Length: 348
Image 1 (cartoon, helix red, strand yellow):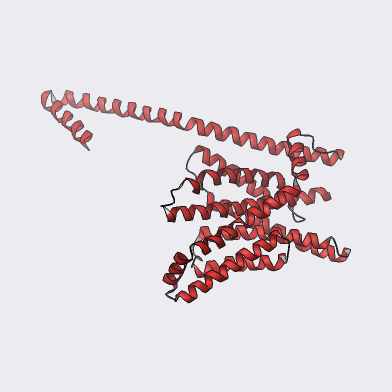
Image 2 (cartoon, rainbow, N blue to C red):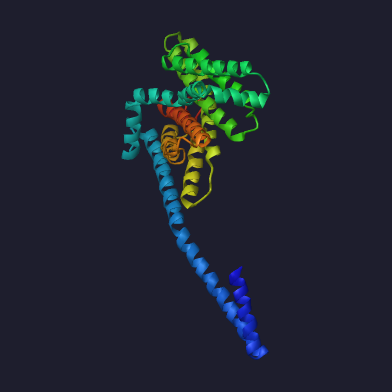
């Protein structure tokens, strides 16, 4: 504001001090020159500011699709010669995932169930605050609030423990899905789009646990029963893949060149996981991206404990994201299932 007043004051003084027509022409040329210089400086600044993100985006984009094309060529060569993957990078990654499947699977389940353990323990430790909040939104009694807290703790902590122990897994998964639905109703979160999508994503991970349990059960039964179970398992894995990748829709932030590059790569990988093409590799890269993003943006340990609300929400987001990472690790360990392009390529 002060700069504008000074600018117009100089103009007014200059017009009064000199011949009006000559000064007017001079001021027109002078203003055009100043505006052109200012525009050139702004453009130069934007070029310098955006050059690195755009260069990074271009490099990352080209590098990723180079890897994808190499993967396609590997598949073609493997289908013709019957040999393993010719690319050392993909061969090493595939070998790592196969050899360490027995380690990846327990880590996946612990990560997937971490949000249920965190939520159940938090409700136990903060029962007074939770009871007051439930009583406030429902205008009910403390008896109703504490009944929900006790029920919510039981149907999260006990079933999650049973899944880790591989006991009554089907019933336990049903209880956890009911817990997610019950929380949506009691906390009136049915219009919260982010909460809804993240709940669906965690549900997708639970479907993979159910598919794994069905596959384990089919190994000890007759061939006809195993065939029917495998079909059900394949459709569960398809539904699980589609639900798990929904999590990325809640993380879309086009706030800079680097973030745009990450989002574009994430979208491509989501598409590959959804159609079941190069599924294990794509899911593995998504795990790395989500893990880095989770540590950076949901660092609850960096928040002072006195900022209770911010700490609780960040802690919740952290473990929700860990659950989705667990679901993706289930895909890495078990693969895409029968309803996928990967399976179609093997059958050709």
